[in-house]
Amino acid sequence: MNASAMGNVPAEPSGWHFRRIAWHWRYDEKRELWIGWWTLVVFYNLYGLLFFVVARTQPPPEPSLSPAEVVQWFDDRHRGLLYGYAVVFIVGGATAIMNATLAYSMRRMSVSRAFAYSYLVIYALATLPGMLIMGVVCTVGAMRPERDPELMRWLYDFAFLSFEGTMGVFLIGSLVWMLAILLDENGVFPKWFGYLNLCNALTEVVVAPAWIFKSGPFAWNGAIAWWINMGVFVAYTIAFLTLLRKMILREDFGSGPLPDLSTAPALAPPVSLKAAR
Amino acid sequence: MTGVEAEPGFSGREIRPASPARAVPGQPDMWVFVLFEALVFTAYFTVYVVSRSRSPGLFLESQAHLNLGVGVFNTLVLLASSWSVARCVQAARERSFRTALTNAFLTVLFGFAFLVSKVLEWAAEIRQGFTFTSNEFFSFYYFLTGIHFIHLQIGFVVLAVAVHQLWSPARRSQEAIETCATYWHTIDFLWILIFALLYVMR
Figure 1 (cartoon, one colour):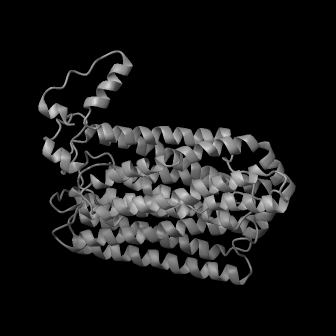
Figure 2 (tube, rainbow over the protein chains, first blue to last red):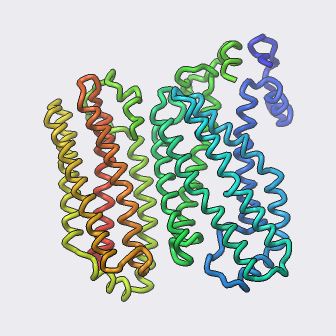
Figure 3 (cartoon, chains in turn red, brown):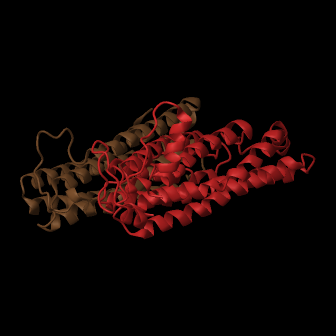
């Protein structure tokens, strides 16, 4: 496993891409972390593609549609909903690897393990209403377009309110991460990212009026409840993907402060590597 | 916020006066927060102004039901809190920690005066029948003052960190105190914009 510590690792091939990937697969000590990171990158891209382009359930439609308009809405994206969510249900489990990678960053900090545990549990729960239940309800609607329009509207409301219902999870999840980063003495993430977590948490609060309004900027498709919130979330996601990548590059599998990128880490001896895993 | 005290620079091992070589007061990281929040609020304000331009009559008429006197009092009390927190930072720089502590408590007091007057103002509006869902103007009114109110409550946690720093000679990190003050000034800065948009703009 830890071939480099045994001193029989061939040099990393330059040039041809597949050989380099094969080399990393075989010898890179951070292989598992990179798998986690790439899962995050691929999943977020796939999520964007499936929800925004294939199923077209995002950006969300108006909450104030009449039953007839809701039937039309389901009709317009009949195939997209069925095929798009079929893929979502196949890859949905990848969220476990993503959450584990994010929780790993907290385990690498000098803080209590309780932070990583809370994060894992809360996001494992969020996957249900935020992604799977919403998907199931949308496909239920799409499967029998001849159903009573009032029932179709019931499904429509249920799907989008289920999605909105995850806001509190993102709120608490961001605060957990924030507190861990601000308390951490290992410098896993810069403190500004701790504060950015607070910004993200505050924009989740702003989604709360979506439960009250059926139109305007505070409705579930509104400028404030959805567009600004999503803008902040995209900036936040780009920030944490970049910082997680840096964290993996800096990782030395020790338990003290993470070294800087400029002083590239010489990997820790095998004992501590095993301990870290 | 409470986390800042555990950071190495905040632990008291590194007591250093503000040096003129530093680009910004306190942690530069907090300025990222300030800038990002400024951007987010600019977006909220833009949505408000666009909505207002669509139905100026409704906004003007609803605005007349707000108590401008309370708004002015809110603004003055927060300006006073910004002044006292600035004096707290200055006193800490001069190592007059007793004065700094007094000013930190004065800031808490001003903040609390704002909090109480805001709750009373909301109660008065609700008694008159103006709630979150009454009309578009009042939705914005409760939303903007409400999200600011949450920032203010976080501000009390931040002030508690500043007091905690000033309390013991073993801590007293100038950087931590300045970081807390930066956050508090942001609350004041955002309020002035909210006040101008909700109460004054015609």
